[in-house]
Length: 371
Image (cartoon, rainbow, N blue to C red):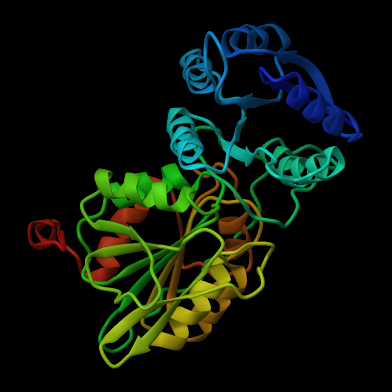
């Protein structure tokens, strides 16, 4: 059985040792080298040909973001997992790294209290991502969903997918668009929303990310796309032409009130190891508008969204998913497609066109948008 070869990059001796030790304890992973800054990382990627890199963000000489840019500039599509801090500055830097081509991220342990707990925390977050981004025989990708984004696409044998027959729109048409994403999601969302006009329905999104990160993601998308994008708040009206992102560590639910659709936030237990969870959003959308739901499942690790997609389909709604070739990890969309719940499996650039057609939106809607 081939081992997954990993290069560990961090200027901290403590973090390098922690990550190296926990990876070497896994029989399916081999640490082939370490580097203390981004310049050395670029050189060792070329010299050692690892399968994956773990990359610190703040380092001397060349930081992690620039190192990602330099690695991508060589044409390499090697998966890169960033190590970031759960702070506003760390969130901004992580999103910058993802935009530069990093594949995902893991939060550094903070206020944990012991080395053992630190190792447990990092191992539980890091190993599933490594196995999802670099699948090997005997290393099935685990169920937990998490994290972030772009350039690396995992491709293995394509499973047989049975598409559903398209459902006619229910009376009154679609009232709500709901989207779920995880690994690879921030950049996929940017691409998708950037290609959409201001839509005639509200858009509610679950992206697996921690607090602070979702706020920064919403702000970044708001600057980039035609629609108004915000982090959802408790009791907030969900208005056509606006996009609402679930806050980190809160489930986002859609509810109907006397004045229309509103956001509800919950700290109910995680589902699919996730809070926010896509399944929770999709179920609540059906409870609020019945079959007038249009759902999209984008790139992501795990199976979050599959059960929720079943609820949408059972109610008479429609589900489209991102295809394997354009997904960073075809876990979430693949689970929905392989369950026979998707009406269409589309490349990311094609999803916007399909959503516009199904929602009856036009480019002229941008001029009358909600900004």
